[in-house]
Length: 113
Image 1 (cartoon, rainbow, N blue to C red):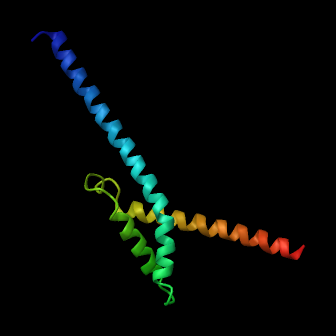
Image 2: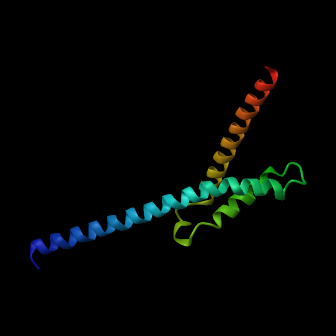
Image 3: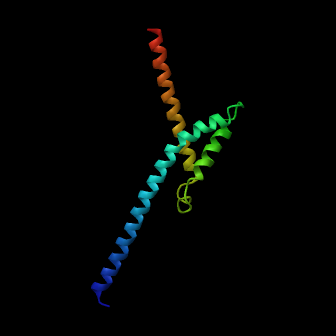
């Protein structure tokens, strides 16, 4: 095998590896987006499931994280960990809370005027 054939082979392996990496990366980004969208639905569901008790925030949170983690396909569950899911859930909850606060502030301002 001459040097040009070796270089061709190495380049094909490199480009093949890059193609696989980018394909997996796109699929991974889609899955993270799907999880973020489902987080809102699961937070609402958890509020309904645990509506009877008080001080069940930890149980609600864990339920949402576990339900979202079940959506992760096997190849990705080494990359997307439960702690990452917990961060997504917490940031989603914080955004919902902030949005609700803004809307309530606007509503009370409107009623006062």
